Amino acid sequence: MLLNKKISIWYFIREIRSQIIFMAIFAISIGLLDLLPWFRKISLPLNIPALLGTAVSLLLAFRTSQSYERWWEARTVWGAIVNDSRTLMRLVIQFFPVGEPVIKDFAQRQIIWTYALGESLRKQSFSDKVQQYLDEHQIRGVNIPNALLDVHSVQLRETASSKGLTDFQQMQLNDIITRLCDSMGKCERLKNTVFPRSYSILLHTLIYVFAAILPFGLDDGQLAVEIIITFLIPVMFLAIEKTSIIMQDPFENGPVDTPVTSLAQTIEINIRQMTGEQNVPAKKENPLYYEM
View 1 (tube, rainbow, N blue to C red):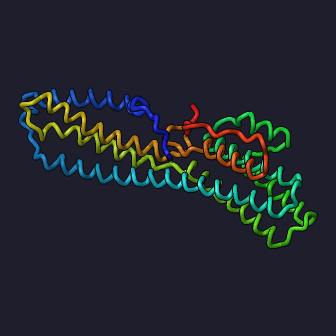
View 2 (cartoon, helix red, strand yellow):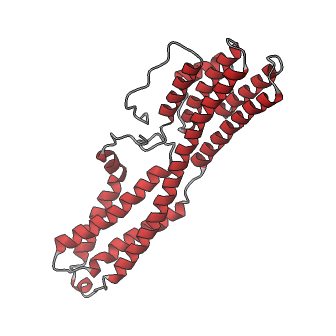
View 3 (cartoon, rainbow, N blue to C red):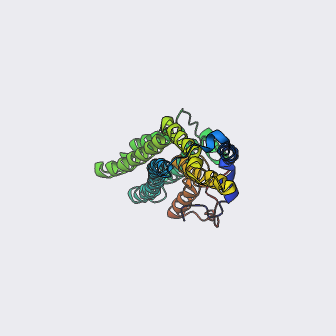
């Protein structure tokens, strides 16, 4: 399951309520304006608003496609993080002697890294679990997840020769850490790359121009129908655009976000089981993928 099935329709309505109210006022005003004698003489072929509506639809299709690609890329990257975390621990367990403290060090640090990465992407304060680990090990830095990977690398370099790791084994572990760093960079790129504001302005302008000229292409004899049509079609356009806006930011702590907390919990359970811990935290049933 990728999305929270409990998303309420009211959540989405709250997101666009101001635009719904404005469009309702706009539709009523344009509809009444069309009844004035001077404006009643203005009649446009329905092909004109239909052509503009087609242009808006194409722009919305492009916007939605780009937003979905960003959302899916974020989910793909975190899927790679899950796999690489398992692989890192599998190799650490395989390469180091059983019972070595370094195995526990890597396991705990990797668990904390996944939680820290998700929380930093969402611009949240670190949870007690993460903050306690950082204070205990005196880890500081502007980019905490990157600092944790640095500690991974430092410990690997310091223990590789003393524990008898071959150059090939050390290279394998370094490759996994490098892949984790690449995934972190991809997440930061998705977080910090803003969709061009000019595109939204153009799209909004075209939607309101469409709503303004649509009544002049409809029959003036049915005022209620004219107002309803003038309201519903632009609102559907605005709703589609809002959907794409919500999807384009996969780390904003919303109901359609990448479920980073749930994925971090999965990684923690997997790692603790791999290292033979007895008190493994239970997976939450039907977890919400965002925390408000």
